[in-house]
Length: 165
Image (cartoon, rainbow, N blue to C red):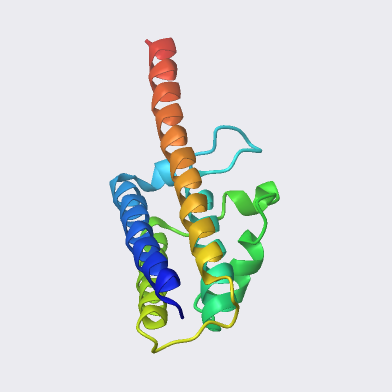
């Protein structure tokens, strides 16, 4: 691996760790009810979005680049597509399970990237930098969606309390 790629991977691994820490911090602050709440019957819940993040990382980094499987195949199949059927959207893993999965994936991804940087690992595909950049962008985008849903739920809850009063 050339020095430029090594430097880029070191930078991206720090950026990825920062983004994932933000996701985990937000998840830690949320209640189970918030994770399950959907803005409409066809809308995605925050829990479903976070599960989708875990599956995306599993497919792009762990399976494609590192050559290993970490998540149950049933979960991967259920969340592989952004266009999930409504019956799968509500069935996201519980908060504790999501936290565990996202932490486990963070540790594995960072170990993998550090192994690449220090020459202890090799990738099964040549586009490691592109995949890591995509993962960071993807997680940031969905982190924004989860924050939006959280605010939307809070706002809709205040409106319904006013109607009851």
